[in-house]
Amino acid sequence: MQSLARPLIVTGLVLVGLGLLLHVGPSIPLLGRLPGDLRIERPGVRIYIPITSCLLVSVLVSGALWLFSRLR
Image (cartoon, rainbow, N blue to C red; front, side, top):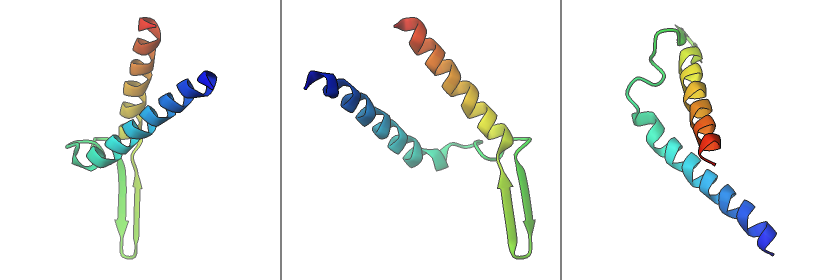
């Protein structure tokens, strides 16, 4: 039973973290409006491609995971 406890706790913490990120995400000031984020608006069509925002989030998550692996 203990072999199942640790993955369930980790999964729960990840889900809580994702929930907090989704809750706070829209209030992050520059995320989504950085230079390099493409926004195409035409009558009846709205296309948004957040290239720079995705790169920034990727670098932050990679750095956090790297730091976590070094502290282990």
